[in-house]
Length: 232
Image (cartoon, rainbow, N blue to C red; front, side):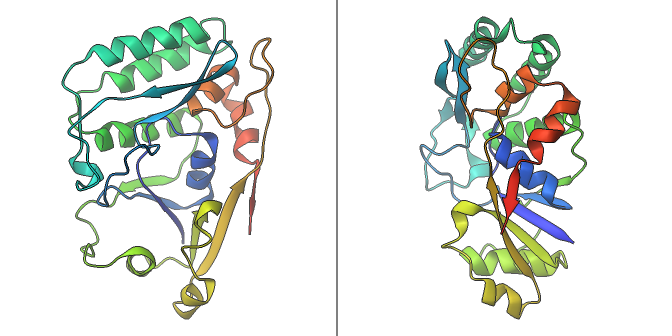
């Protein structure tokens, strides 16, 4: 079995979904500390032909809290603001209506935490893109919160009887292939490669939120973008 593990991101970039698709099981790492100014609750969309950072406001977010403990802001005004920005920016995109309806449904979910919204968002967008990988939150499942870093990942791999673990390329300094080999687990890293597509009359801007990919590509076209990576 091949597994991948990542913190829950809301509407992440295409590389996150490449990681999900490359695995048999994707584990949402929501019982680790929240990362301030990370990608859990924010990403870039295309506004006026340029990247525009949207941020989902949170209630008392802190790196001293676990991700699953961080709640969404109680003021719902951010939802209307985000959806209005999407309408203004993407209403001329070829797949606007179906994608907007899905994003609106996710944004308006009756959930308390950013982790819940992110996990539901991942499941719904994966279904739209025809990614069949099982997605499982790590909360309370593995009982190994006393472990840290690589050893905790290895313990999850053992419990899942995984033979292959895939991590984003940014983690090459964090994981040791020899240590994984000691546990009879293959360690690979995934590096996304740029896969351009038309963004109306704009020059192509890569690595935006998956929202942008969905707006400009039919589901069957997205499959080609999901293949644009290297494993090493």
